[in-house]
Length: 313
Figure 1 (tube, helix red, strand yellow):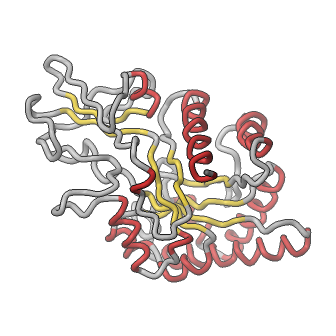
Figure 2 (cartoon, rainbow, N blue to C red):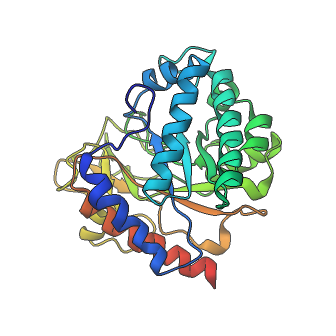
């Protein structure tokens, strides 16, 4: 985002990444693709500035419609982490809703004028109860958005003093942090089940154990394990890095002498046990690490196509 207008993160994205991504529509004529703006590293200040006035929001909306149509996307995903937190003022909770309503009206008007299908509107939202209560008017988000992509991951990681699954489907009785709990939490707040999308991370969190022999859940940890060969980020492994380390089961452990490492992804879940309750599906969450996009995108595309085949069957 620049001057309250949507722009590509990299100039080459418009020439290479977006066209290659949207070529997937040639394999599935019913496929719809969305462009996401924001994320953790994006911060909050540009959202706050854009949301602060009607004129800025209007400028953003006009740029979004033009950009999406030009690049052959079918909608927009708002990845604002988080309204009212991380330096974002509390008024952003409400101006964020204003933006969503104004985007929806503009998308509807554009569709009527051009006789094209309306652009879709979604948002990526937290799975943590206290953030949900602070950042969102859940009832209005459920009304205006086409889908809500719940960030049901990063429940545990090396920032804690004990080990835990990155994205557990279910959890221990004393630990409410799980995908099932999060999805049901949003549903109980009034969001229609058919609008809820469960996030599925394509990466794992790693730990440096205090004692190598004590390596189960909630074992004491002392920070992140060593970085992966390609992502070079302590406490983190991209899915393909786990594959390269001979990933063979739901959780893979590797203990090097003296390093006391525990690495887990929790990705190899059984789809039959996914807590659907009418939910629309899964959203692949790709890591934003310092590694070439081709490496990350190729593995994410394989995973996405696999899930497409599952849901089609």
